[in-house]
Image 1 (cartoon, rainbow, N blue to C red):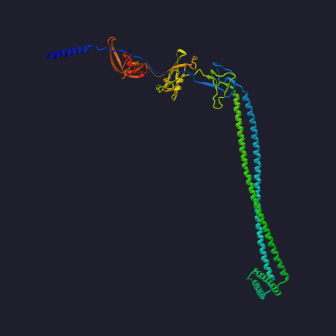
Image 2: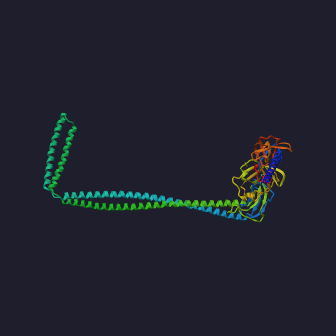
Image 3: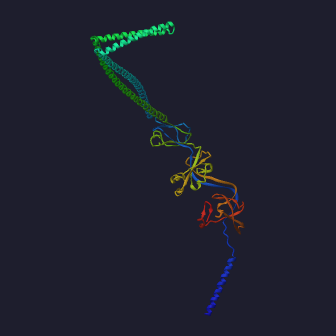
Amino acid sequence: MAVNKKALIAIGLVVVGGGGYYFTRMKSAKPVVAVGRIVSAETGDVALIVSESGTLEPVIKVDVKSRVAGRLSRFYVKPGDVVAAGQLIATVDPKEVAREVAGIAAQVRSARAGLEQTKENESLIARQVALAVDRAKIGVQTAESQVADAEVSKSDAAVNLRDAILGVETAEKRYAQTAAPTRPQELAQAVASLKRAEDQLDDQKRQVERRKTLLTKGFISQQDVDTAETQVRLQESDIQSARQRVGLLKEGPRKEDIDTAKLAVDAAKIRVEQANIRLKQADIKVSQAKINLRTSKVELQNQENNLGTVALRKRDIERSRADVAQIENRFAQQSVQLTETRIVAPMAGEVTGKYLEEGELVASATAGFAQGAAIVTIANLKQMQVRTNVNEVDVVKVKVGQPVEIRVDGVRNVTFHGVVASKAPASLTSSQAGATNTSASASSNQVVRFEVKVRVTDGDARLRPGMTASVDILLDRKTKVTKIPTEAIRPDDSVMIMTGTKEKPVLTPRKVTLGLRSDSATEVISGLKPGEKVEVPKVDAKDRRKVNFQDGPGE
């Protein structure tokens, strides 16, 4: 057990000594520095660019179609020809259109004749109805006058009847008086009246004498005497009438007077009967006049209702006039179509495509739902544009008016210039994006893209529609600034400054202030001077999985 204990102690000493030796060796050894590519900060330009590919096309191009259906009789241009606005391109056989124009012209003449006939009928009916209304009004006025006259006649007949009845009553009273026997009381009264009258006459005569005496003495005027004498004469007349009455009463009624009074009563009764007949006749005339008035008013109402027929005739005129206008419009349209058999260039440019041949049938571009086939395409090749699609990440940076550099595969080693002309407000579908951007792959079609049109400012006859073009849209540019490769920037916006020699490099981290950054170079605002060297770190397979190509290497 003692031997074993000593052995274990020896082994422990050996292990401890070996470990100390290894630690001492490791501590004294120098670290190995792995240095990447070394570049110098320099003064230059930094540009932020969006690069895409697209297709050249004219800014303005027109597919020329025919407004008239028919057979193409002749062509006057071919692809590559330069045409002016209004120049004849082709003609459509005008025979069928000319026949239609002639037929519609005949319809126009017929419709106009029908309109004139409708106007004449309306005018004639209007005059007839107006005359009938006037006659009916006159008839109403005449009937009203007849009613008034009949009412007056009836009123006169009623008055005559009342007068006749009164006449009968008077005649009967006279007859009664004439035929009545004399009564003693009446005779006594008549004698007494005569006696009073004679006494009054004596008194008045004495009054006259006294007044004459007073007149001679000058107390009264001659007029007073004359008045008294007049009273005497009147009194004498009354006495005479009273004496005659007394005499008649003493004689009694005479047969002749009774017969005369009886005839007067009969005559008065006859007048009453005649007055009754006239009143009935007048009443009949009033009734007839009222019937005539009602009939005249009904006739007037009927004739006034006929005025509605005149209004209907006026609407017939409006319908006929509308028919004429409609047919004239068709005639004008068809006449235009006759001129449209000559197909002319709507604009100046170059014929870039010809799609039909002489003798082929062409459909109208304005008939029905069909848009018609294009006959030729005319484009203004002096104004070209590139239509491209930009992904949603970059499109927000693109502005109308930004400068663009354009390179065309068909024109090598030449850079054309342009500007952003428009940017679509909405994204394209996958099929649209793939059809426009010829370089897009099937996987990239899943990226949301927006159509951007770049107008070419350099006119060049070598630029042709359909060519593939690459565009670099300059989003921003800084000139004469300090710049370094974007790969040299660490994730924390620092760089590794290299000092020392190539054999003994010394790398020191330094914070810098960065400005405009592109995929290849980044602006350094502060923290680094031109000429200072920085390290671009090596990227191995493991690090490549962490690279952010937008901002440089990352964790």
